[in-house]
Picture 1: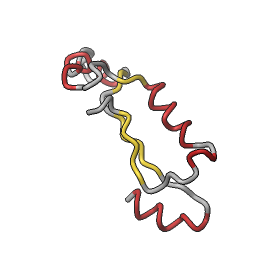
Picture 2: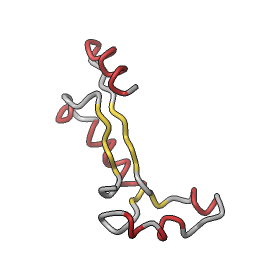
Picture 3: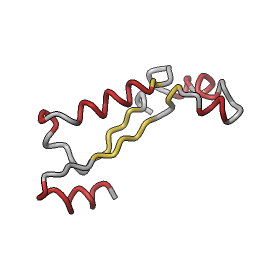
Picture 4: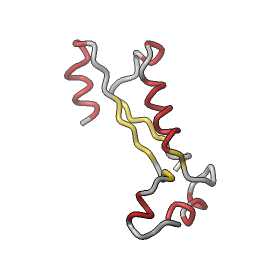
Amino acid sequence: MTIGLAQEVADEGIRVVGIRPGIIDTEIHAKGGEPECGKQLESWIPVKRTGKAGEVAEAMLWLMPDGASCVTGSTLDVSGGR
């Protein structure tokens, strides 16, 4: 979907990039009844820690300026290497 949409709107100057977060330390696990879920999975993550919501936001911000103007039709993993 990302690739198709990126190709469809590229000539209009619109870029399309997917963001694929990994295990991110948020309240969603606690709300689901498993507050330690992220911590229990850290050994499966190459960087040995869960990500932070701010790191996902920073990845999005990196894509916004003209320095990333040739990035389109791809997916950026923010997953700690997983």
